[in-house]
Length: 444
Image (cartoon, rainbow, N blue to C red; front, side):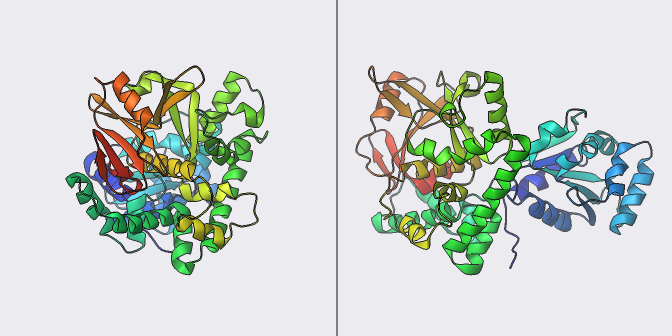
C-alpha cells in the first residue's frame, strides 16, 4: 500500500504561498525518491481549487514544445487545460513543473509566468543533471529554493504512528532531565530502527507493509542502483559512482578527511572539484568541510580540499556498507538493531548525526588540530550559534574521556558556547560538557 507521509516541508510551502502570493515560484530540490512529487501534489490538492502537474519525465512532445515560444501565454494556458482536462482559476490554481531539469525551457519560462501573475508555480528538481541542462538558459531570479531531505527522525516516528516521542524528548532536553538507563535503551533501539530503515519514503513504506528488514534492504538497493545509473549519466568515467560507493569504507577508516585519490587515482584540481560538486548537488551525499578558523563565519573559512563525505540517508548508508552481499541478511539487521554486531558502529552513528544535523538546517563543518608530531585532535562537528561555536565530539561507546573536546575548549575558550559529546547513553552533564544521547541530535 502506497502511503502519503506527513512531511515538515509542507509548512514551508504554505509559508511561501501565503507570503509571496504569486510573486515568485518555488523550486523544491532534493535527491530522487525523497518524496518531492508526492508532497507537492498533496499540497496542490489541499491548498488550491485546481492544479496541473506536468511530469517532464512523461510529458508529451506537444507540452514540452509549449515553452519554446512564450509570445502568447493565453494560448499556452488554453492548451495546458485542454491537454490535462483541468480548468485553471486565476490566483486559485497552481501549475507544477515536476522534474523540471528535464525541460530547461520551462524553467526559464518561470520569469514570464510569474510576471503574468495568473497562477502559482511549483517546480521540483533532482538537480544531478542540472548543470548540463542549464548551459543555454537564464536561471530565473523569481525562483525561491528549498531543500527536501529524507524523512527526519520525527517524520519517521510520525509514519509509525508515534507523535509523542520527539515532543517528550524535547521536554527532556530543555529541562536537562535524565530518563534513566532503561528508557534510554528503549529510545536507542527505536533510533537504530530509523538508522536501518532510513528516511526514504519507499523504504519506510516497505517496512510498514512487511515488517521485514531484508525486503526493506531490497527497496534501498533499488534506490541506490537508480543513483548509480544517474552518476553514470553525468560522469561516464565511473569516478562519481566509485566515490559514492566508497563512502562507508572511508568513514570506517577513521581518517581525518576523505581520500578521493586512493579510490579514483590522481585527478586535476578542476576535475576533482567538478566531481565533488556533482555529488553534492545530487543531494545524495552530505559534505562536511574542514574549517580552518573555527569561528561564527565558518563558511568563509572552509577548506574545500579537506572534507568528509556522508550518505544523505543513513538507511542507504547501511545498505552500502554491505553492498558486496546479494542482500543484507536479516541476521545482520537484527544484530545491528540490538546493538550486538561485532563491529565498531561509530562511523554509522557519525553518518546518522550528519544526517540529523543537516535535517535540522545546519551546514556541516569539522576541525582538526595537532596533538603531537604524529596525531591530531578532532572535533567531529562544529555548529555556529549567535556569536559562539558549539563543538561536538561523537562517541559510539565510552564517554569518560573527551580529550579532543576539552583541548578545543581550552584553545578557543572565548569562542565556545555550549559543548556536546553525543553518545549512546542517557542525558548527563560532565562538568561543562553535555553528554547527549544521539536521538536528541536534531534538537541542537
